[in-house]
Length: 188
Image 1 (cartoon, one colour):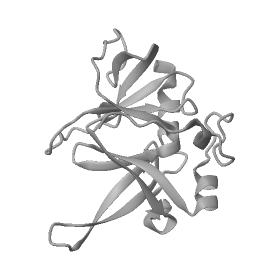
Image 2: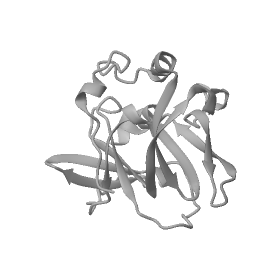
Image 3: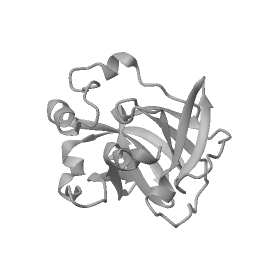
């Protein structure tokens, strides 16, 4: 699959507020455009997504150098074109024990600098696509409260056709990656 890179001009749009670390711009982007772009990926057999504007690129999993005396969800670090990047295993961080039953092509989603001051990547089983969903496809009633640690912005209803051209529906959990990273930033 290689890598994709988000154009810097797209990141400087008025709805993306790069100067406000940790600010929740999900709602403002949603209301202005009426749609949402996410990067869809799989961990185990479940579908997840993160906001496209919280990502920088997707890379094939390189050789990772372990870091001693770190939490189990920190896989290690890589040299990404001259920048030391810490890799977080999202499966371990979210306590997902089920292994993927399909083909496993591990990928690293490199996070945008608005997510953390440090360069970070999240290890996932596979990345499917960048998809745009309308506001009607996303149930934000399922989002986490401030007290919970589920870190969910909503649940996306993904409509797709199966081999027999019948409509099938799948649920994609839209993760609040900024909150997840903020919670563990002291360990990075």
